[in-house]
Amino acid sequence: MSTETNEPNQDAIADEWAQALEEQAATTVDEGAPAFEADNIPVKTSSGGAQDIQMVLDIPVQLSVELGRTRVPIKYILQLAQGSIVELDALAGEPMDVLVNGYLIAQGEVVVVNDKFGIRLTDIVTPSERMKRLSRT
Image (cartoon, rainbow, N blue to C red; front, side, top):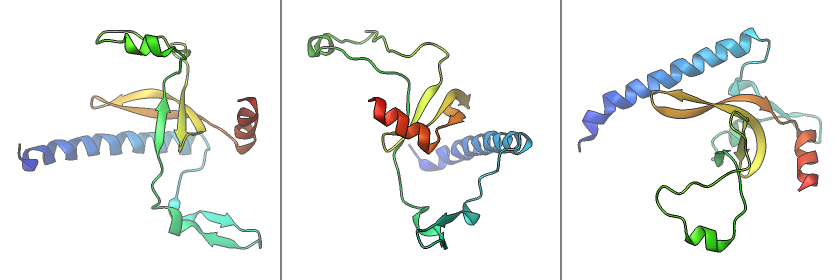
């Protein structure tokens, strides 16, 4: 299969995601939340000065969205087959957890753009909330 035939389709997909992100950014700004501007993010250091964050912006991290969890015995796993259903602890309509490198950072709802899943963040977890959640586990 030639990559040339996939490029226009990939461009269309990228355009649709860009449009969805622009709509989200416009909604966020209208609601009074600050828009994300990576070029102007200062980081406070212990000496009180601002350090440029640009040097860490390209470091890759693992972002994942968790639908739910369950605990089952190994014998149950060995019996799984195509069409098996695994019940999770999350309820339908409940926000999904957004994790970065395994740490909960936000919750959100599923969105679909051009037959691809995405997540719209509905709640950002504050550092104090993260500490509370860590102490409960």
